[in-house]
Image 1 (cartoon, helix red, strand yellow):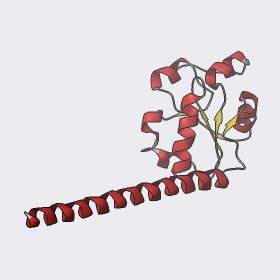
Image 2 (tube, rainbow, N blue to C red):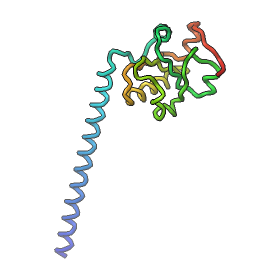
Image 3 (cartoon, rainbow, N blue to C red):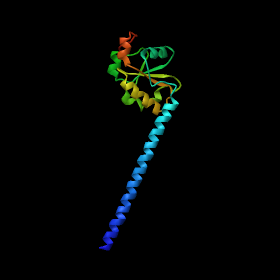
Image 4 (spheres, one colour):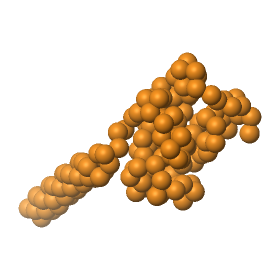
Length: 150
């Protein structure tokens, strides 16, 4: 009986150690996430996370790379002239197709996917990245030119 009680006590100690190591691992992961997030925002603080349609037009006219993260069928319906399409679902695996030495304005239909695209690019080491607020919907309302077809 004493042997069984001793075994249970040893097992509890082992379980307690595992639990403590689990908590330590979670704390380390949390600190790392906060550090990476603050580092990314510090490194890119000269680039706003989002710009207006008007600012995006100026950037495009000044040579910024326009990245559309919508699906091909959406892009075929309407897109910014001279934009490049890489669907958001493929972006992380295709970042090598993008210029690291050029400003990138990410666009989509309404501005939601483009913000997500910016996060993907920032995580991949791109620094000159921003999203067009309101997306193609807002660009069309503002009267800026768009094209359709491939």
